[in-house]
Image (cartoon, rainbow, N blue to C red; front, side, top):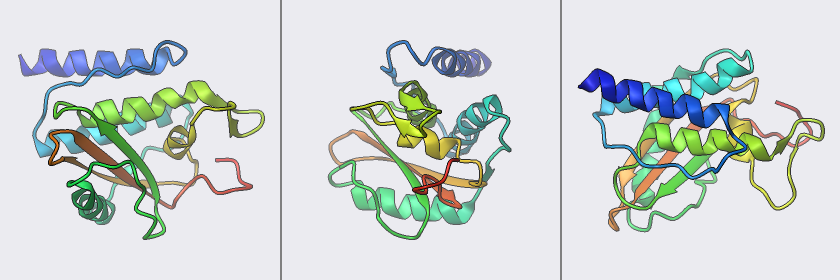
Length: 172
């Protein structure tokens, strides 16, 4: 049964990555153990990076520690506010309810590829794509993430990247 869950999760992630022009609605999956969450974060990020022939991210305990600290700061309000510090790149995610997984957050960021214009290195008018560009930023090598259940019962996810991406005037 655990293998069938992992196969289903991997299949959903791959399908969401292969069809970014479809709806970007992400359906929550069940909560998993912490070690599985780390694997989900890395797998989701590295599937996206592999599609663009980019080196895989390495997990950073230092980045994960900062992400956990910041996620705990958002536990009371679950607000989509960036930390604004530490000099890392950062992606944030909010999901209503507690059953959102690491794969759901990464899948939502990856789905923003549909809004990215490679020719102009910009998002389509009125669309957000900067979470996606951080995922595929060429010089970023490490990632560390955290997920918390907020007081409201909702889910907040944050990932930190080093070196940071989305530098104005540069193309990832």
